[in-house]
Length: 102
Image (cartoon, one colour):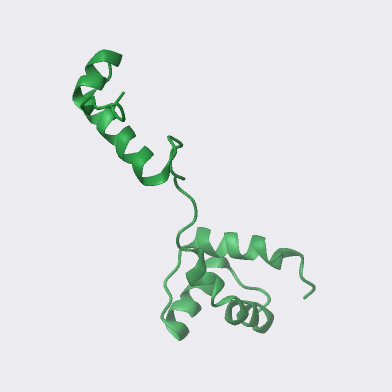
């Protein structure tokens, strides 16, 4: 209807939706050619720790009786990268650190 000349607000009223919704849908259609929603969430920060994987694995090899917090603290002290315990866990899980031979 909007492509046929109707305003977005008039189209919204006819379909019983909020004008802001019609405006956003038309903008999305014109921008992307689709009404599909954009991707949400996802990992936006693991590249910081992944870039230091070799360093972290070397720390683990150097001190096999590590804790996640100790490894994170050393990473911050020695390389200036501050990460949480859960970030360390996910890195270790991805790289199967818990199954590595000592």
